[in-house]
Amino acid sequence: MNLLHTQDIHPCVASASELRSDAGQRDVVTRGIATLGELGVVPAVEYLKSNGVRPKVIERVLLEPERRRTLA
Image (cartoon, rainbow, N blue to C red; front, top):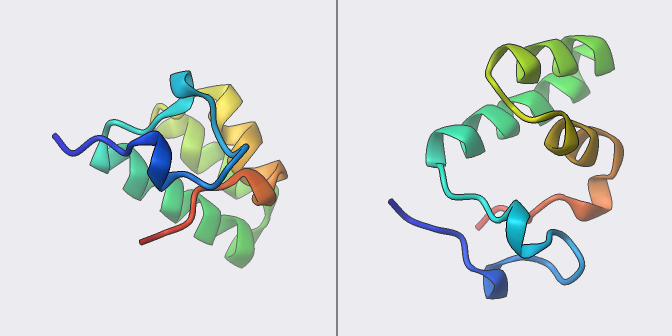
């Protein structure tokens, strides 16, 4: 498992408890963000919820784009 470390996250993006530890979850969130751009908020939220993304994460990635992690 490849953990994302604090130095890999934009400052003020996420607390230590929000560090991504699951590549599958990363892919789901990335697709959820793409869904937001393609279809809007409701389909993006439903997609993320149906894939087990926590409500706090959904809120952060969809409503606070400045707090999203940058893709390497």
